[in-house]
Image (cartoon, rainbow over all chains, first blue to last red; front, side, top):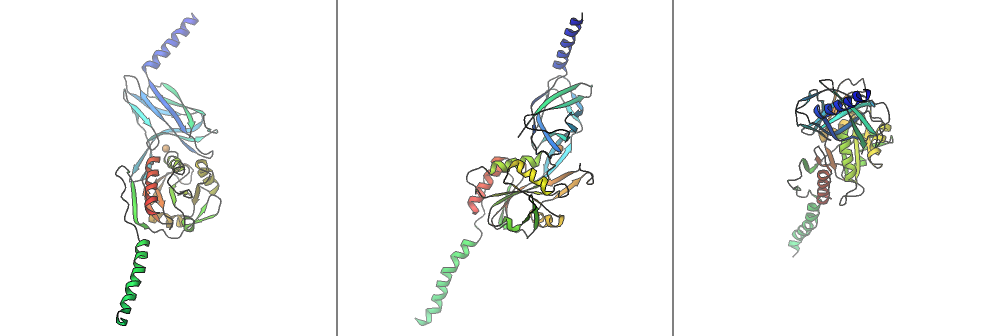
Length: 138
Length: 206
Ligand SMILES: [Cu+2]
């Protein structure tokens, strides 16, 4: 019986994954000097499901705070703004890349060294939690 | 014959002076290919006044440090996570290209002197390249350097905390060996754009 429940749990969690699907590809964090207080994470975040997914919060055990930011250039002026309504429509891919969107990782509580895998938790409006890993590289 | 002697002197004089005059004057403005976006050339160079900043080793960094060599200068702040590291790593790649002078100086100027002390600047610049220079200074001295270059910036958030952000003009400046601005390259920066622009500008104006 216990086995059955376990199997059922695994099955449902798998099907949940294939349904409420947020996916992240090529996640990486730009390596920074040891004293850096802010780092940036990049990657392609996609919505593989048939419903819109809203991300309401983000966090990482390695940082005090995580936010989604967008860099913009207006006549050569560099400006960084928080993206507060992170809604991904079905099939949409958000490209987080240098000079565009980034995961702003603030106040590290440990050394963020090259090749380290940084976990980032994303929570959706429906309370689903995802954890993605971002590898630190130059 | 005596009557024509002064005229002859004038002619010989002009023949000697004129070529040197043209040689030392500004060359024709370089036309860059259309594929190179965001690159602006100053013809003649934009003069920069004397200024005194402090470098990453606590030594003075003045306009004299720009004289005699080409320099690529970028303004930013070390707490900047996205744009400044991108431009700094582009500069590191540029420094390894062929066709540019090996003694080019790469200078990061912090517009955030309150947080970016020399030790911090040193850690930041050497992370990208051991030879890179970091400099900053008082608001007054920074202004002398920045104003003619058109570097503007704005502190956002509580500057008494350490969490404020700096919105800033993020061009890379190409300074010629007179220490004046020969060109600037707007962000976002790529190796192809900055490297090619610098190569063409150096070859044309050297
Ligand atoms: Cu940011």
